[in-house]
Structures are given as structure tokens and as C-alpha cells.
Image (cartoon, rainbow, N blue to C red; front, side, top):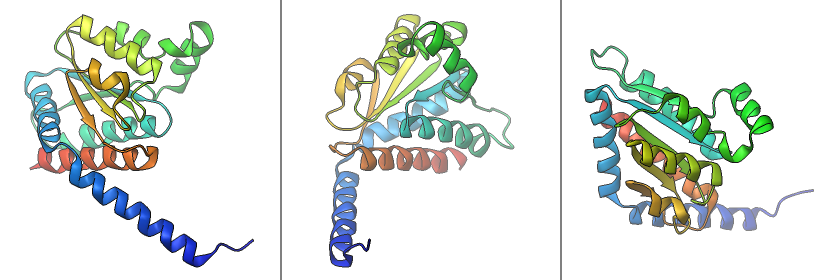
Length: 190
């Protein structure tokens, strides 16, 4: 089977056009606030927790790498960032014994302290396990951030700060979430 080159190029151009449009419309103030909250966590010595499902899980894990190593290496004040979806055995144990909707909230019950920073990622903004964990974190007195796409879903309304990629396209929303992380990394490394 051979792909139609003209059709493929049209799809490539369409993707880049929609990506650029979304970049132009993302809330810059939310990005600045996200960076400020990460820096505050570093200065105050608070833990940062990240989590998500699928591609958002990958971004949550990437966030830990960039913040723990990229932003903290060689500095006196360091970040303490933990990704709750990185321990597959823990995720599977809670999934099997308790239920997938509780895989993140149960881990937060072990670790989350008031004033910690809790970052939930959900492209749709409606992942039940992310919403439950954010709800718990808020009750615990943590600061909450939600990375979301589409219309923001329930997550956008639940968090202290929403980093919202305003597009009905999962891949572009996930692209933008990673871009925001990389912007924050570069700012916080300087």
C-alpha cells in the first residue's frame, strides 16, 4: 500500500497550521504562573507530584526528568519531583486490588503534605483517576495544577491553575503540554 503524497502533505500542513494557531492562543499568563509555582516549590522545599494516563503519563514522567535533573542539577536548592505513574508495580497493585480510579489518590495519601504542588495531566480534562487525586490534594491543602486540552473538562474547573491547550485534538494538546514544560525548564535553569 502506498500513501498519496499530496494527501499526506495536506495533512502535514493542516497539523502545523492547527499547532501554530493553538500556540498563538495559549494563555501566556498561565505559563508564567506555572513557572512561578515550580520555583516557589523549590524555594520552599515542597514536593511536586505529577501524574497522567497514556501520552499524559509520558509527559508527567518527562516533567520529573527535566525538573529533577535539568532544573536542579548543580544547585543548592533543588526540586523534589515524583511521578505517580512511574512505578508500574504500584499502579498495577492499586488497579488490581482497589480500582484504577484510585491509583493516584491512594499514592497521594502516602506522600502529599499541605503546600506541596500536585500536577495532574489529562488531555480531555475528564480522567477520573486524575480528578480524584486533584480533589484529594485540594482537601489536603496542596496547590493544584491541571494540564488539559479540548474544553478543559472538569479538571480546568477543579484546579488552582489550568494550563489549557485550547484545541479539540489530543496530539496537539499533548504537544503543547510538552512545550510548556520545556519553556519552564529553560526559564528555571537560568
